[in-house]
Image 1 (spheres, rainbow, N blue to C red):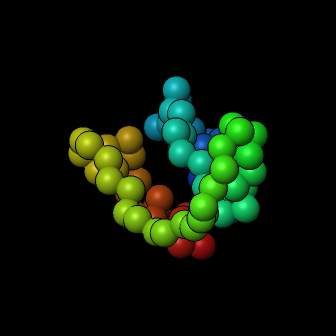
Image 2: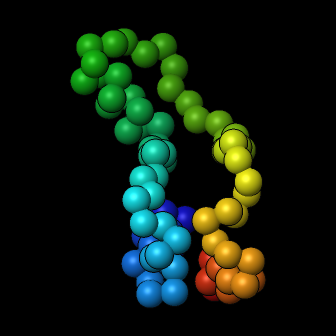
Length: 78
């Protein structure tokens, strides 16, 4: 997903909608989280991941104008 997003952010059709956009999330494996704990001098009892929905405040899809929403969905699906 992040690779798709990175590609879309620089495409001529989409880049104007994402000027100044900072993606505040990282997606790490359990092993990477365990390494972060070691670096922070913390001892873990268990490290596991679970999926969750990312919900954002505000109007969904508001960065993309109505004429381009279908094209955006097509880009992501392909």
